[in-house]
Image (tube, rainbow, N blue to C red):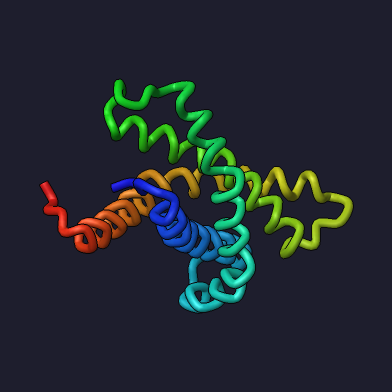
Length: 160
């Protein structure tokens, strides 16, 4: 289920940003240490304190509307199937958020110096496939289903 009003949009964004940012931080820490290790799951929470609010603000103020506008160049609300709408918006969100969040991570955590542009581009390139797959196959369905469960529960709707 997708948000139906501004309040729902904020709640949905907070939840989606948490799931996406946490996974991407874990992924980046694992890349930095040469593979996934148990400590990564806890270590990610330090960066979450910084990266999660940034992702929420970017999504609510800028990315959400632009991603929708870009997606609607490919799909038409009311005409195309809902899954196509969801995939188009999700894909455009990743296309916008991945370079932006990689930029923030490069500034805050990479100590890139004179190689700033190269490090940012590399970070974006390394993050993009993971972010897109995570969004399409894991985070998107998970967050929409959990969000939908709570919205239906609150409004008393049945799941058809």
